[in-house]
Image (cartoon, rainbow, N blue to C red; front, side, top):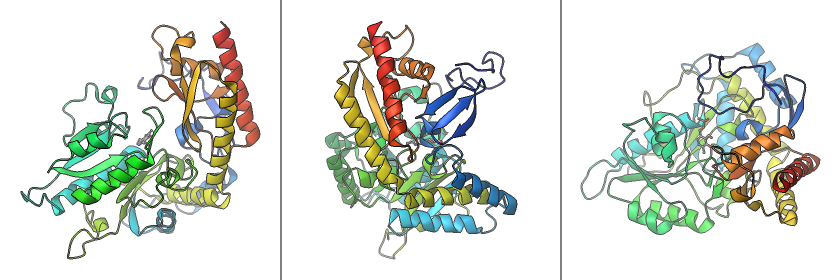
Amino acid sequence: MSTSIDPTTAPILATYARFPLTIVKGEGSRVWDDQGTRYLDFCSGIAVCSLGHCHPVVVEAIEKQARELIHISNLYYTLPAAELAQELTAAVELPGKTFFANSGAEANDGLIKLARRFGRECPDPESGQARHEIITFNKSFHGRTLGGIAATGQQKIKEGFAPLLPGFTHVPFNQIGALREAISAETCAILLEPLQGEGGVNPATPEFLRAVAKLCREHNLLLMFDEVQCGFGRLGEMMGWRALGVPELEPDAISWAKGMGGGVPIGAFWVHDRKIDDEGTPLSSLLGYGSHGSTYGGNPLVTATSLAVVREIKKANLPANATARESQIRDTIASWNHPALCGVRGKGLMLGIGLNAELLPVPEGKTAAAYLCGELLKNKLLVPPAGAETIRFLPPLNVSAEEVEEALEILKATLIELVAQ
Ligand code: PLP
């Protein structure tokens, strides 16, 4: 394990606690560092490289599009963006329209703007006042823009950035009573990750999701899903919430990024066409001309690539592989009965493995999760932490049973090494 880059002199802002590793090459579920050492990559660029590294479908889509047209701006139509929008609507299986952004945080900013427009179009019926408040949840993560950090339910993400964008209320996740109490005459929307990722891999229960949808109907609130991390096959269905026991739910809006692009920087949000008033105004019409935009958003290079990625996820039935590999991981870890582990949370290939921190020799100043990720890296397995006491398995959706077995062997051997110390 090494890096040729000296973090003390490299002119890169030190916003990340990077592992001491410089990656120079990737293929499938493997990456190589600048010393030629090979690693098994169960991080996938934090749930981004859904087809693995440099999949031929991705490489060919980039090469082909780069020869034809890379960028043209949103002053004109392009075929890849139009085709991808069709593909996304087909994946949602509901009538609606998509806006293309460049990241998950940007996609969520779009949802926040949509909610505010909705609160103005559909004011509080008693006072006639516009509604602007969005309820989100403790431990949520919605990105690093000013909108994203205001929406996020984790104090550490907001530290030092006051005054924050107003209009957000955070309530405990999976607690319907607390949510019901938080709804006021100013509330216009509820935004949630069906499966919280960065906050520790916490799935919403089906009962909670159903109750949230019911409250949204009762109070005329938008139901908005942040599927930036959990969308596009990762949970075992194209749409994340459909893997969580509530396939019948109809969100009003969804944000995506990460896995939909397989590595190219793309984000998007989708808005339902449902009517919001007696005149038949579609929800998707609230963001009309001049209301939102992005110079790069949906450019031909990224949309052609994302189109290839989404089609390959469907063609190769990768959601089914995510489900099969989940069973393999759960069964194997359960069979060890290792005292340093306290259960597997999550769904498909977005899994969090809980740690009993007191059983690991964690050095002062480190979290158990960051420490174990560092030790796994020494044993040639890359995984990211999720919170202080959870490590995540986020391999490519086409990871093989053999690769999963290999990763589990490394985890087991590392735990034996550490706990025997
Ligand atoms: N929303 C969720 C659920 C995420 O997991 C993330 C990133 O981890 C984001 C939003 C922000 O996405 P990005 O880093 O692409 O801005």
